[in-house]
Image (tube, rainbow, N blue to C red; front, side, top):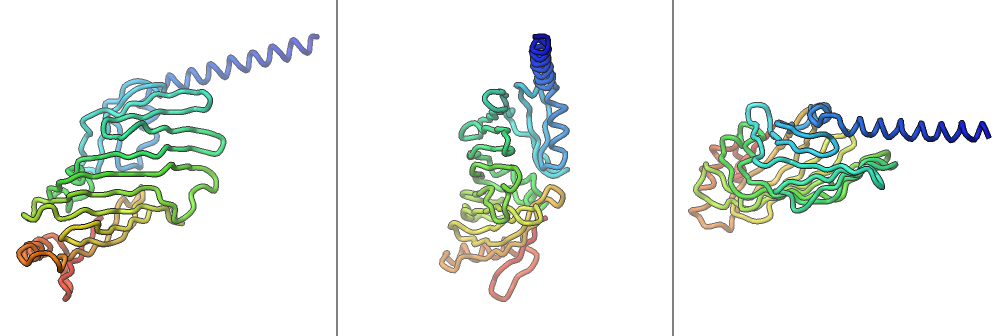
Length: 256
């Protein structure tokens, strides 16, 4: 009987200690948690309020010198049953993003976010000077991060720049473009750019990592089927925007 009582006491004590630990964890300032986990990412929190249990933060995105803060806060709500789960919302998201922590690792639900194209000015000096217009749509599938779950070649996102325009040419829209992002063996992300449609044909490839940021080699050319006046305008634009022109009227561009 004494052993049974001792066991019961130990179970109760362990339960309350675990509950106290979880409560203390949930009460941690959200600023501390976010600062510890976004230092190597191309965005960081500003004006954070609340705890990891529930709260909100404004988010600044982009490279140093080109940062912009999103106008609406990202909000989150955490629950612990049946598994630890964080629900993230923002007006630009098509719906909530559900982040779940389980025995197999971290799971992020599929979702779509739509962004104004001027946010591309945060990527680097080239895009910052181009005054981009249009709409950016980012879609990602359900993602899992855990042992053996990130095979090379796995698609992680599809990014589309729709009705793209820039302030360096009167041709608008230039077209719509798609970047497919997938994992690589070395832990970086492969990026493949293709043209959906439009008078300016762009194609290229590159990579992205938290350390090296975005590195892209692109080729631009005017669609031979476009009217002559548009092709002439695009040639003038490409000679200003690019870094070299081939004999076939193609312009090379490197983003980094």
